[in-house]
Image (cartoon, rainbow, N blue to C red):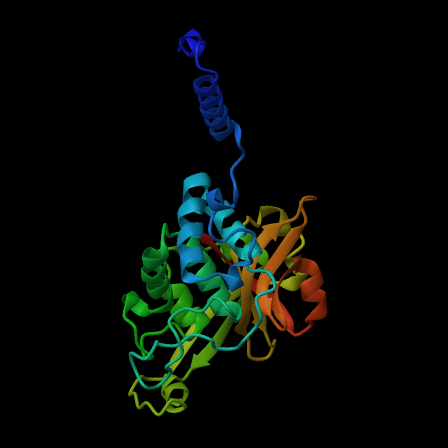
Length: 283
């Protein structure tokens, strides 16, 4: 524009100068608070539903790698208070009316489930659908279809997402174990009667003594399950594998008092009742 057209009117020239300055300021001004994601720097366990929606959309837009999304979500959950059994069927049944999802607290299982469900989802609706598929056999909500037993339910019904790497990683050091699963007794605690037969389950784990040589091949976002009790082994805890800046293999898990990240071998030293581990990796 030729500014000379305003040479006879100082006021018009001043107005034009102000307008041009405003335009330049709009173009050069750094993003203000309104341009930031809703969730800001809040930890995930303080998110609102709106925060969660915005975060999942943003995360998928900027991070195409699934494993990295898992680790980011898990680390954003650090500090989330531990609570045993925070999830239920959300009122769909009277037996366990706890909500279908919970951001304010977790136990070891629900932490892994919700973290992976979020990493796989682009918004809250997809997160809830994916979480249902991870927590329940064939995604059908119900106490009887929930994956209660890690070895015989959770691992088996989530074969669409994970494959066991225990045998491949452990090699000749892998040890077999058996456990008895009595669903009838388990469901009686909820006032449910079932004619499910007692199940004899066979499985395997990598002994703690052999774990050092396996550490280099554990990958970020692997699910690691801890087998306890040498006389009657069973999976009693689980978490996620991460690595720190120095390459140290870390455990990121939900345990009292809150979600935390620490070196995997340090965790094992603090829990001598753990006899070995099982590992799962995304397909």
